[in-house]
Each structure stands twice: as C-alpha cells, then as structure tokens.
Length: 208
Image 1: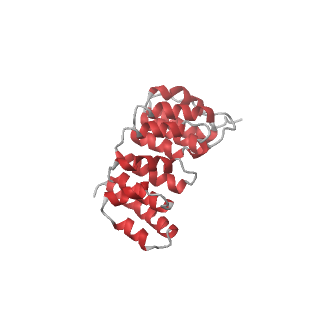
Image 2: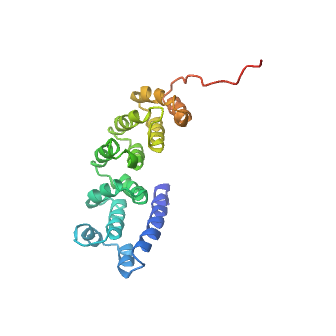
Image 3: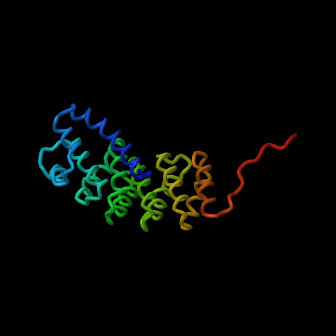
C-alpha cells in the first residue's frame, strides 16, 4: 500500500468514528460506510432530507474514488465552519482529479469574509500545485501581514505553502512576512526554498 492509500485509510477511520457517533450508530450509517455501489452513494447527495453525516460520508467516499459527482458537496464541506468537516473534504478533493477544484479552492481562500476558515483551502492549493495556487496564497497572505494581523494559522499556512510551491512571485510577500515574529522562521525557510538570501535577524548581544 502506498502512502496515498495509507493517508486515505487513516482519514477514513477518523471520519468514520466521528460520523458513526453523529449517526447514532444507525444501520443506515453502517450500510453507507460499507457499500461499494457508487450509484447508492451518489443518490445520497441529491435526495432531499438526507442528514449532513450521510452527505459527508457519501461525498468523501466518492471523492476519494475519483467520482466527480462528489465535487459540489465536497466544496460546500471545504467551506464549512467546522474544521472537522473541512479536513476530510480537502483530502477527498485532492484525490478527485476534477479540474474545477483549484479554482474553487482559490475562490474560498481569497474570500475576505471567509479568511478565518481558509486554512484547508490554502493547504489544498499547496497540495494541488495548480496555476491558481501561488497567486491565491499571495492574495490571501498579503492582508494578514499587518503587525497585529488576524488569523495567524492561515497566514502561516500561506507562508509554508508558498515555500513549497517555489514560485518567485511570492518573494515580496514572503519578505514582508519576515517582520512578523510568528511568521519569521517559516518565511525565512520559504525564501530559502526560493533560493533567496535571507536578511539577518538580530544576533547575540555584543559583550560590554
């Protein structure tokens, strides 16, 4: 089993435990968790009255299997206020292979009204390495670099992602991130991955 399959198995175990609890251990849950029928799973996404746990389970399983009928449901989950729902949605979207995914993730990451919930879209864009990835991370990061800028975890995700993407267009925003103590080390590493020289930080005090 390769690392991708292992990661999917681990993510499914975590999802399974959470959603089984939400479903109260119902027989309907066990059926959806066990079925190999994509048509049955896809029907859950369109039938009225289905609970959220059922839609999330069906979307995750279809997404990881590369069935693009899961796309809309997974994007909605990626935009959910509950981080526990965003993480498996990002995992499944990364494996879905739908060409719309990067554009959707970029739209979520760069929406200033949703920045507090942008961490998983940022991480997904980094994993996808799509043409939209670096511009979206740059645009998301820039407003977060004020001295008392909000959402430091999102800002850190952008900095780390830009380093991994290695796009030279990120140089100005990464240099600006050096001024934020909470981002300085990650920004220095990211600039190093771009092959940039890093301005020296404060050195040890000189002896009197």
